[in-house]
Image (cartoon, rainbow, N blue to C red; front, top):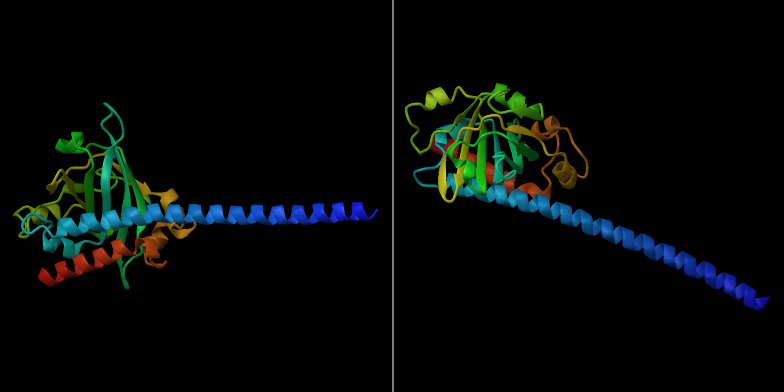
Length: 244
C-alpha cells in the first residue's frame, strides 16, 4: 500500500513538473518569436532611416529643402523588389510618418505593390521616398489604402538643392516621388502602385493592429524598435526648414 502511495505521489509530482516546464518552454518560445518579429521591424526602420539620411545628405542632387520643409508626410520604402519574372510589378515594405501638432507621428508600417516604375523597371533593390505635400494627399494616406496616380495625384519630384522652374507646378501634386537605384537618385513616376497599411508589421511593432489614422495622427507613442526612423525624419526635416 505504501509503495502504491509513493507511486501515485511520484506520478503527480512528475506530471506537475512536466506541465510547468512545458509552459515555461512555450513562454520562452513566445518571447523569442516576439523578439524576432520586433527585430525585423527594427531592421526595416533602421534601413528606412539610412536611406533618408543618405538621400538628404546628397550635396547637390538631393531633395530640395523647400520641398522637404513643406511636406506633410514622408514614406520611405527601402529595397523595393521585383514581384516576379515578366510581370514587372514591384513590392516593398517601409514606414510612413506625418506632421502633427506635437511633432512627427509614430511610424505606420506600409506595403506598396504593383504599378509601373518607369525607366527603372528592371533595376533591383530600388529605394523609394514619397512625400505627401498637402492636406488632401494626407487624407488619402490616412484612409490606409489608395492607388497612386488614381486616388491621389503624383509627380516625379524635382532634384537639386535649388528647385527647378517646374517646382511650383509639381507642388500642386499631392505626392512627389523619388527613387534611388545603383547610386542613381532621381524623381520617378509611380503609376498604379497601391499603398496600404502593412497589418503584419503593425502587429509585430505595436503588439496589435492599430488603425492607420490613429498612428499617423499622433495618438500612439513611437515604439523603441522604430525610433531610429522618426529621429532621422525629425533631424532632416528640421534642417530643411532651417535652410529654406
